[in-house]
Length: 97
Image (cartoon, rainbow, N blue to C red):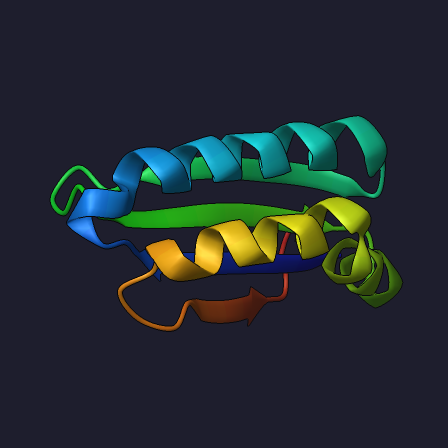
């Protein structure tokens, strides 16, 4: 298993567009990627323009397939203009089964 936390800071005037595009990506990921066991989209309670996606993948191949998926590639041009800075991606090794 591989855990990923993606942190994204969004331009204040792009929040609605960002949330719409992310919801589409979440739906497509959950519907089409059985090896993705967790894919949660969350907004910070302290900073309403900061978001994270908590992700859990069966293995590196599953993560690679997600990054190359049609829905991920299609979301990137919609999400990119919404971002205030580059996303921060951190990988984690789960310590529990």
